[in-house]
Every structure is written in structure tokens, then in C-alpha cells.
Image (cartoon, rainbow, N blue to C red):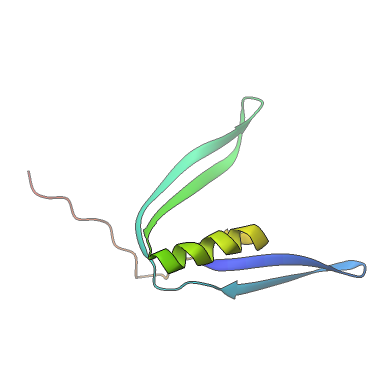
Amino acid sequence: MILSRREKSGDHDIITSEIILANIRVLAIDQAPREKDGQEFGRRQDHHARIEAGQAEILARARQTGRLAGVAQPGRCQRAKRPAQ
């Protein structure tokens, strides 16, 4: 998980990013359209992950201070295998 922050510095903004959690096991990703006034203007993604209590605390604090983003490493993502019917 990456935390990005925007801070004012005089007449311009400074954007900083830092990795706050790594090697998180993602259980599911759900996508849904974003709508405003009946018009679709993007997609929302919800990530469901398995994390420990301490990691949940880190995410909760980080969410108050900036924007969180999840990043997947290429080649490390796997689809769940469905049992044979």
C-alpha cells in the first residue's frame, strides 16, 4: 500500500509518496461504476485483503493523512483456482 500526501509550500504543492505496507495478500477486487447525475464517470475499486490488527491500524491512520493506493507486482497476481465440478 502506498500513501500519497499533498502539502502546500509557498505558491506550489509538494506531493510525497511512501510505501506503508508490503506483501499484503489480496483476497478479492471488486469494480463498480461511479455515477453522478445519472452519468458514469469512472470506476470504483474495492480491495479486500487479509491483514493483521497492527496493519489495520496503520491503514486507518494513513487514510486520515492522505490518499491510499494498492499496487500489484506484475507476474505475482494469481487467479483463484476453482474446484472441478
